[in-house]
Amino acid sequence: MKIRILFVEADLQVRELLLQTVAQQYHATAVRSAEEAVEQLEKEAFDIVVLDLNLPGMSGLDLLQHCPRLKPGIITIAITAHATIETAVEAMKRGATEFLMKPLVPEDLLSSLSVAAERVSRQALSASSGMAPVDIVAESPVMHTLLNQATSIAPFNTTVLVTGETGTGKELIARAIHQHSPRANKPLVALNCAAIPEQLLEDELFGHVKGAFTGAHAARIGRFEQADGGTLFLDEIGDMSLPLQAKLLRVLQEREFEKLGSSRTTKVDVRIVAATSADLEKRVSDGSFRADLYYRLNVVHLRLPALRLRKEDIRPLAQQLMARFCLSAGLPLKSIAPEVWHVLNSYYWPGNVRQLQNAMERAAALSGARLEIQLADLPEEVRGGAEYGVSTPLTDVTLPTVGTAIPTTIPDEGLSYEAVVATVERELLLKSLKKTGGNKVRAAKLLQMKRTTFAEKLKRLQPDSENDLLDEYQAS
Ligand SMILES: Nc1ncnc2c1ncn2[C@@H]1O[C@H](COP(=O)(O)OP(=O)(O)OP(=O)(O)O)[C@@H](O)[C@H]1O
Ligand SMILES: [Mg+2]
Image (cartoon, rainbow, N blue to C red; front, top):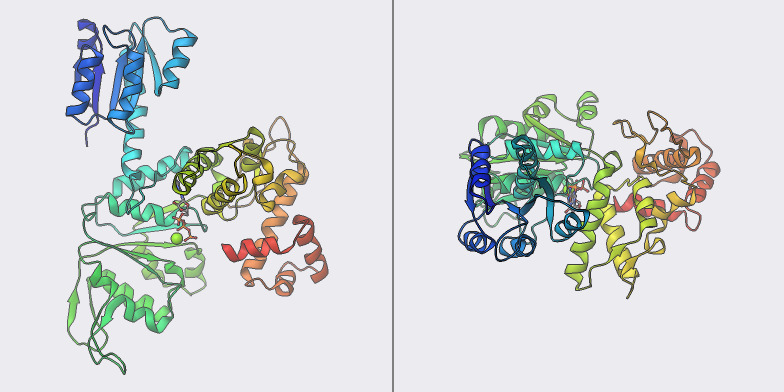
């Protein structure tokens, strides 16, 4: 789609320069005044408005304020001949995302526009599915790239594999892909492969004919058929049994299958998006996941990074999640105190965005009539990070992508040894608990530690109740 730009500029020569500069890349219209701009905005859906602040009649500042009312989410860029700090601040307050100085330099204009255009496409992708459209926050470069990839493959029928730790947004991305495909007006059928016992899963996927087995009084349409023309979202694919993996592989290859109890083949046109928080490569190497199925699914692989590896996203996410919650709960919008940011940034977030979401909801609820979220409103385990003397926020520490909290370099200003060690320790304890299904004795054994030492460490990381870590494990 071509981005649509509206220029609002009183000077004819500048108007022509503007139109000429962007003619190749964008679809642009130019008007002379704010009044004409309003008229134009009512008629046509623009993505970006570039306006001179100095306009005859209604002022540029007033127009800035009107723009989002005329079209929510529209991006505005202000032009000015004599920028003072005050006008800049005023324009920003009224929603301008950027400032261009006169005389205009075409390259500057183009570079500002390309940043804005990228935001427009991100917004378009994130106007997600279902009843509650959710904006996908992607401030960090890594999420940015990932969202671009998702946008570019969305229109095709390519199979997509989405992986990432729990709560990183796999389902959100899967839904967005469907929403931005030509299949958007056909069903998106989701199936959680881990939640359904093996024997039932086959029936769920393929359905059966009447009389297929004892108790099959009526025929049943499987998810594959339900999703015909649309998208089938296979969640937790890593947990599918080997026999079913073989059956799924065949459907992916042939696009056809037989319902239980039937010898007739059913043909379907379904796009597959699969997700898992399991390490599929590892499962392939230990034989619990078929390599051929893995390669079938892995046509496009979107790897969602853990939240702690993209700290730039923490703030905008927290703000969005807070706003989402306050809006849905009918609360006034709450702000977040400066000292809280520090803690949010340095925490390890094993439950990723979902955990941040829970923390924000809890904080909003606990803060009562207060309009500002304070440290005390954060869950114990999150505050924990601060108690261990994080004197330097861990924000600036570069984290390796292997998912450990050990910084690759020590920043010039130094870092808190205690905090890093506490984070690593906590990660090990949690991982071990996860692996053993919460069994502390076995978890201790795995870490070659005495049970009592394990319990002690658990307690030290969770001064008030050692069960919080367990809760966290269970919640994840
Ligand atoms: N980038 C994001 N921007 C906005 N909201 C997000 C983002 N990522 C995740 N969320 C929100 O976080 C929550 C968890 O996301 P989602 O259910 O997609 O995660 P998941 O990876 O499927 O988790 P799980 O592995 O536990 O199934 C959702 O409420 C989702 O809307
Ligand atoms: Mg999920």
